[in-house]
Image (cartoon, rainbow, N blue to C red):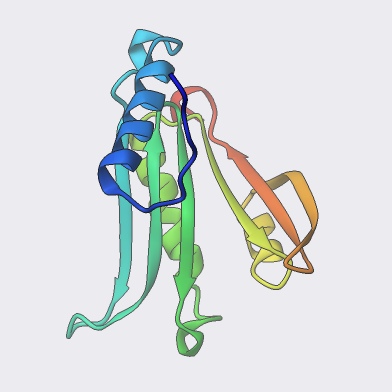
Length: 145
């Protein structure tokens, strides 16, 4: 058998790789963590339903990962980012997450995340000619703290 590598975009092929990786991972995680997956979608909206930002992420096994946190420029500095993160942390604790993680670039919100209790655990220099920071916030064992 000879295999080839292709760069074609195909949903079924992507689903195959993701599903197989998930199956492999499940063989190595303890039973109490299996099946612990949930999308996290928190949105900042006005009374008319207009969106001004939000958090997109996921709860996976014993952590919450924030993939995107955005607040519209006109709303920044009013505490909405802090409120969004607090709501995400509340959800993480309710779901018995032990930590939260996220990443940010040097021109984004590093100091903001540090003020919210996140600590840098990794750095990549020259990521798009910026610095890429990886941050983590411990919540305690199953968020009991």
